[in-house]
Length: 223
Image 1 (cartoon, helix red, strand yellow):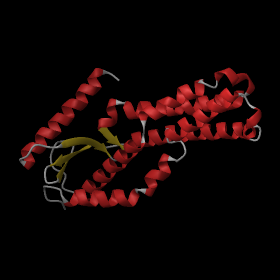
Image 2 (cartoon, helix red, strand yellow):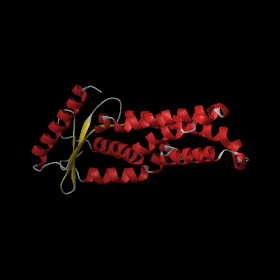
Image 3 (cartoon, rainbow, N blue to C red):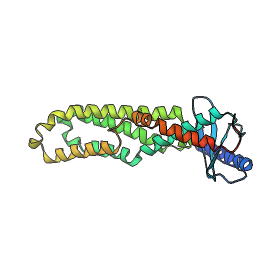
Image 4 (cartoon, rainbow, N blue to C red):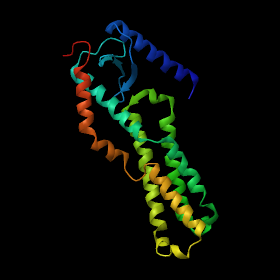
């Protein structure tokens, strides 16, 4: 990502924080750019109290109660996803897959499937590490879910391809058994056992409640 884009994000967040301080009369505790859909940008500002302020792209307070609630929901949903993503664990799947290279010729299908899973996990880690995570974007969250879906599907193929080995694991090379176990543990640590989409869906009610609380604490009147 170019430095110009990062500089722009820093400037935008700084301007939003400064505008919020002038409106609320207190220094912000945090600011997040929020994009609930493909069009439109808002700034969600946390203030002491606790209290919140939602600014439009022109840095004026949002007046719509429904819009503030939508922005808060989008922000909380993205933050929930971010909390579930362990970048280090995602990146650890690649070396676990590479450790199976000595047996690649005997289990090419399984090896290739795990390599695809590691690649998808790496893309998800890149997503989580990107400076644009300063933007709580629902469109970008869809991309993250897509990366995880592909990684999970590839890992399921790996599990299916190695299932016949379970019945004869006593006759397998001990190093292979350890490598397979390490790959399984790495995939579990990377979160490939559970669909990110489903986990987030299960928390929708809590996110709604949190958004309602934030909207109720908005420092300017809402209609």
